[in-house]
Length: 459
Ligand SMILES: *Cc1c(COP(=O)(O)O)cnc(C)c1O
Image (cartoon, rainbow, N blue to C red; front, side, top):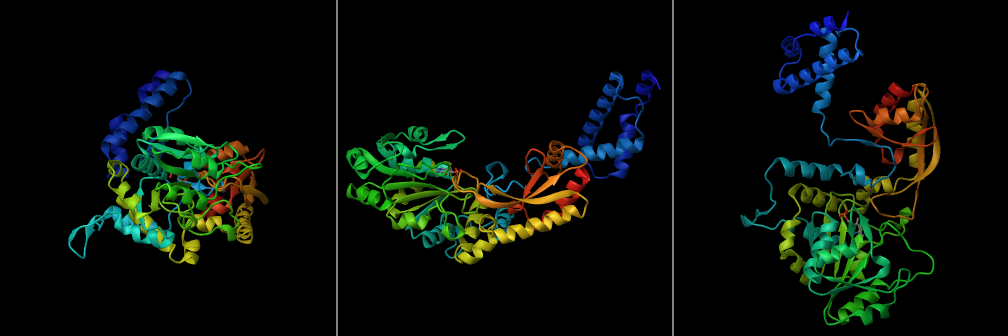
């Protein structure tokens, strides 16, 4: 057919719509009209360019529109399958919640709740009450408050405690967390002057003691979450620093970054101190993230001495960085799991992934590998290492068992791209000629989906 004839014979929009509505009832007519119009315009452009030489059948048009409609209805923020092995992948949403935490958030979201209501007295309650006692029990602190994230926690602490004076910090701990969150700039925002002491590699107690002046508001310690200085180094032990602070009647503040609630050393994670350690060493205010090693929702948890936490609660910024009910519900459920640490290791995905034994990982990798081989795919297992991620545990790699796939039908890059483009995208890594999936961050129940999708593209 020549071009003009093709253009003349393009089905009318109304005909397509009538046909579509008969097949797929209850679709927003505005949406489907828009999709149809776009489709017809593209068809016309294709004909004019000479790319399209024959018209699609009505059936083909309808099935194409169904695909477009499905794509249109996908949420932008949706599930992905994380095959990178990075447990706290900030771009993929950091910690995954336990069932208990996710259910608590779900109910808090859908229904009314006791958020700020005391059922015993029938009067107004406090949103902090739900987690304060739990946090105190788990960390040994006197008091607690939760805000939106740890960055907000640091902002609130420095504003409430440090503003109008100086805060002393070691030059080795002037951390940039990423996303333009840098300690010196945050202090500027909080109207407190940064007093740097020591050097990059060594800071002594006397560096802090001679820095303390009448307008010194606090000493600050920042966990070097995302880097380490090794070699000829020295920092001041927490208990010496807290003694010094208390002699001068100022608080010692610590930004712990991840802040684990359980000792992870038995599982081979060495550089992450627990919150309890800090409280026992006399730190007055400790802040840490909810969605790093804790394995809960995004939140900034602050625990410490009641006299300081009270100041934070009543500061005007506290309202601006107030945590929402879904987060609080998920956090309370997560914290409750920690009352029995052994069950926490099983129910909190972050902890389960972190503490998975090499034996278990190898077995799971073999299971996935076999499922791929059963589909005639070329797959084997390689031993590798992965980071924990989320700006935590920077110097330690976890042993990994990675399933490596060599596609026959397409290039490794094409496979990676195709899996990334799925409705439920699969995110893996690429080496020179193989596509890698690390089972540590996968759920076994997704193995058959993964095998099916890879089979569809790679065989
Ligand atoms: C990650 C981190 C932060 C920021 O925490 P968010 O919860 O991501 O806001 C602040 N300080 C340190 C030391 C960190 O590691």
